[in-house]
Amino acid sequence: AQSVTQLGSHVSVSEGALVLLRCNYSSSVPPYLFWYVQYPNQGLQLLLKYTTGATLVKGINGFEAEFKKSETSFHLTKPSAHMSDAAEYFCAVSDRSGGTYKYIFGTGTRLKVLA
Amino acid sequence: KAGVTQTPRYLIKTRGQQVTLSCSPISGHRSVSWYQQTPGQGLQFLFEYFSETQRNKGNFPGRFSGRQFSNSRSEMNVSTLELGDSALYLCASSLAGVGNEAFFGQGTRLTVV
Image (tube, rainbow over all chains, first blue to last red; front, side, top):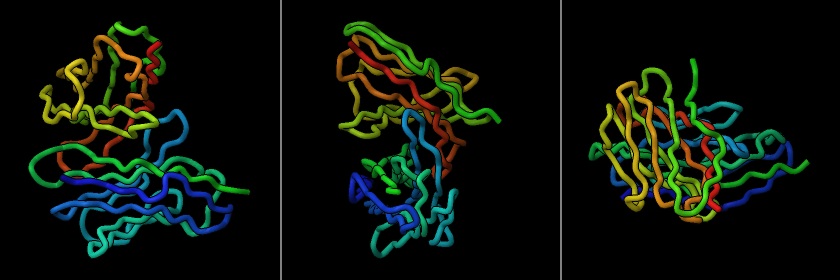
């Protein structure tokens, strides 16, 4: 069964510093991978996704993620944190085989940005 | 283009009651999924509907049920509410096919007292 592990339930960075949120997945086949962001009392908003092709994926708000098959990772980065980036971030994998249509989400990482 | 709409946004119910939540997907999206989000369990998949058929179901008791209408609108129902059912319920719609991103509604915050 597929699974997603997000290392660090809470991450704090200073404004202007690099943001690195870690995600590792477990899948028997190349997966579809996603990063979502959630602001308080809101739904999830897609930041970026990897399906096939280029392993470095650029998303909205300056975020990007790199798919590394050898490390089964899909870490999210942003060169310079902004106060508005404070939110909860979820990594997700979508099953690519067997005809199932569901997302498996990680437990989330809450990002705090310090002034 | 309108996004995913969930109604109501907030609900307070008493233990033992039942509740129905509604979700209107993005126009053209035929796949609708439901998730329960709690601080302790995170995001958990409830079920997914496509063209009025349930295609996938998570590990939830039979008190949780859903349906989808011919216009792709979906409802989920929880009967005999328990305190532990208090959560944010999220609906997501997507185009058919694995790999298409899910678009989420703002959720319905259910509080069971």
